[in-house]
Image 1 (cartoon, rainbow, N blue to C red):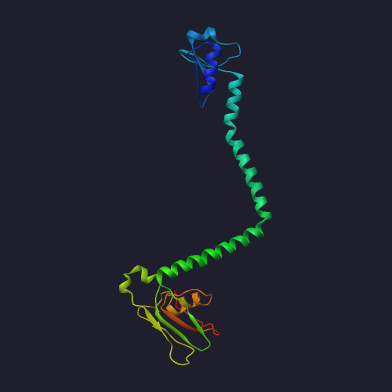
Image 2 (cartoon, one colour):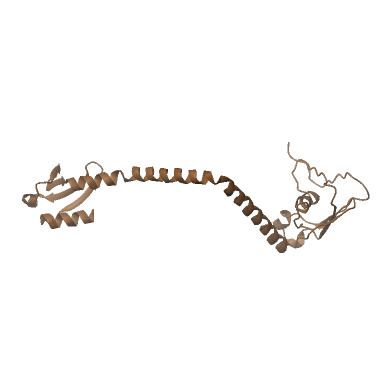
Length: 215
């Protein structure tokens, strides 16, 4: 608008010429009554005011058309680019999913290593004996919700050759828990470090661990 106003002032010699816009009449050129005799022939009257007239020119109409349809054209162009991108991605979906799995796996193990080093986790010892022994097992959430010196680590070592152990505790009714054997087992089997001072486990047997939960 500033460029058009400068150009029209230079063309007409009217220093007070203004280019404006409103929602009713759109873009216009406003000229006072005192300068009506300087109005060019290609100016088309659009609105009469008390102290002047508002006009429009073919060039201003073209400018208005470009501005008012810009949003629609931008949306159309964005849709075209999106559809083109989606088609290109769809052709490479197998490679993208493979790369995503690799990155996810790398991120998981890197994060696990960082947490293990920070929290003092240890790697379990797998044996050929029918044995499960956890030394100073900890709960990863509970111990962070209370002062470290207030949390008491727990040992778990079922006696003898027992294959079934019922592990209970105070106020466990109806609540979901992740007991030390369950939590450490999920990390020990794939090779992760554990939130315990140590764990010995039979490499041949995968224990079944059942926890209570809300109905």
